[in-house]
Image (cartoon, rainbow, N blue to C red; front, side):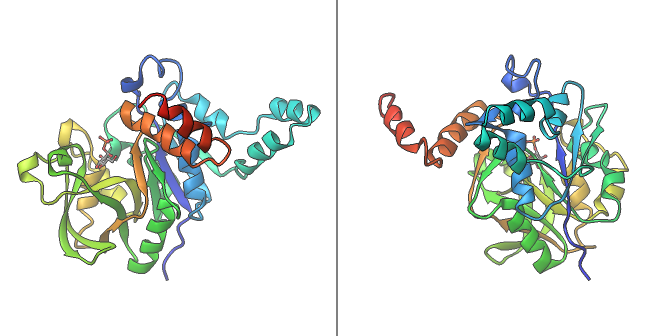
Length: 289
Ligand code: G1P
């Protein structure tokens, strides 16, 4: 019987150099889109997929993330005394069960594959989701829930994929297609950031995965790949042939919030989805364009 998907790993150890000086003293995952930090969107998305246990792969200077998911006792008392019911409800809605959020420090920045390997004790023998919080998803059905559904259908590894213009494939993990069935694409190979002329397709991996625990054994070999880093894509590639491996054309939009333009676009797109501010945002945008 298929094991239920209950765990998620969120790598948050990156330095966020592209957002300096904003990220000098705070984690880039704490930068807000409208009124909530990037990390919260990822956690909410995972919860909507039935994920109950979270492991953040952190590093120095990331304590705000841990604080964010803790109970802020003094703040809640103050809100209570002031009768701020709506704000209190917001805080309560995001509260995690005690003992369901843990952190592991990556210690050395050896790559995404290494970051995931650091969660090996948390993962144990269970399937797990990975969410890269820089990729902010706007989907009617949580992107991780779409992957969880595909995991139940295929019984194996699934990664969210999208088509990008051929001249951008060298920025992503790229899949080599065995069979394109539309929503699901069975995968026969994976390459991390290939030179454009060597890319097997223009179907790229975005920062959402559901993987089987066996990937850890491959990552443990610490083999260096693209950019001299230990790549998750290389570890995943080793699973192909031994376990089902599919790409999922997810429904929705992705905003690359690791990039300033993507981050700005996300602010607008998410503000326009908020009924209480959409009209005003639309109005002021007219004065700029
Ligand atoms: C990582 C992965 C890459 C994936 C991308 C999606 O790259 O290594 O395979 O396509 O995330 O955002 P990074 O953006 O961290 O360089």
